[in-house]
Image 1 (cartoon, rainbow, N blue to C red):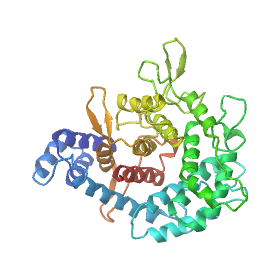
Image 2 (cartoon, helix red, strand yellow; image 1 turned 45 degrees about the vertical axis):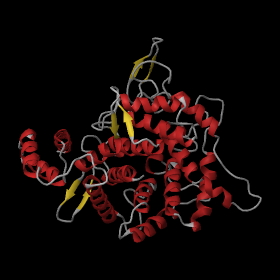
Image 3 (tube, rainbow, N blue to C red; image 1 turned 45 degrees about the horizontal axis):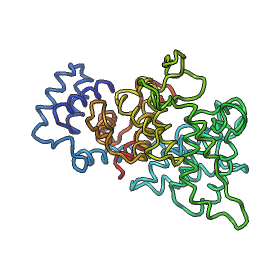
Image 4 (cartoon, rainbow, N blue to C red; image 1 turned 90 degrees about the vertical axis):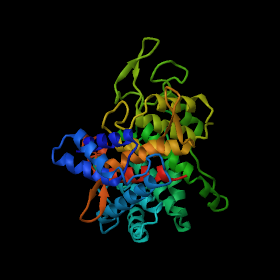
Amino acid sequence: MLRYAFDAEQAARYTGLYGGQYILLAQKMIRARIDIRVAGCLAILLVAGDLRGADDPSGVLRKRAEVAARRGLDWLAKQQHKRGSWSSPRLPALSGLPLIAFARSEHPQREAVMTRARAFILANVHADGGIYYKAPVSITGGLTTYNTAICMAALAAIEDSELTPVILRARRFIAASQRLDDSDRHGGFGYNRSGRMSRPDLNNTTYAMEAMRLTQHLEDRRAPGVSAVDVEWDAALRFLKRLQSDPAAAGEDAGGFHYNLSEPKAGTVTNKEDVVVLRTYGSMTYSGLLALIYADVRRSDPRVTSAFGWAGRHWTLEENPGMGARGLYFFYYVLSKALRAHGSDQIPMADGTPLLWREELLRTLLALQIVDESTDTGYWTNAQSKKFMEGNAVLVTAYALLALQNALAP
């Protein structure tokens, strides 16, 4: 159903029309097994008199996105456990992401929800400064760097000075989690500080760099005589370089990023030197772009311009480019963060025409939201792939809400 709903949304865009009535009616017709082309035509005819142009981000589209965000937050509030967590309490990061969404909102239950979530995250703070569920098996707990970085960013989003000591200890934990050795993984971050899940990858490296950059201003609040803490940014950049396809190379992969140094998650390609290399893909390219920006690499730097150019050559919201439906909502989330941080509202397409990514993303997320009319709440789910935990509707909804907020933000 979701795939056809998106197709209906695409049809509406091509006609210059957009609206909630259209999507609701089209989805109902799809459920009734009415051909999508018929559904699209009927819906357009029925609502054509009511809708304004779809290229008005400050008008009807923005208002509909704000309603969708409110519905999503309403739904998430109902999913929160009594002790403040969402999803699995063994993965605090899954509660950190919804907490960030509430912290950025003006939702009427904001304070109550945040108070419970804050208490849950603080209950997972350890003496070493990390924020994680301590378990002997990493599948059911651990992932110490991943959980600490996201929860650290969540606590920072609350903007409460009482949390500063916790965040500063978490900064020390993250800094100590960076791989600094003579290997080709030097400078990166893995899921854990040590052990089987410690192999650095771009996803965890970006989360760690983000958390450290977002909380850097708190270093001034350390007690007198206590040394400041930071990651080795140059080492992190060297790790990023190993994951980026040569910015100067020709071809579709130039400037893109892949996940780590060995896993062909999106397959492989043969470069101009006739060497088989890992293929780049959407969510990791935007993660790489974001990491470069957090490392204070200039927007005019070839590493940044080539990653941004990759976005234009591979632009689509119908899939995670190179991965299909796998990690689709994480793709929306990191795309919105990276493009917002980059500061460009337009992406130049291959033919030179500008694409307004904020409006495109809003329309896509609006079309994919599942609305419960009985409660006037809404959520998102990746019905096509459960890979990367996207069978979890709470996680997917958190990704979608954060993407909506990024697209709506200045």
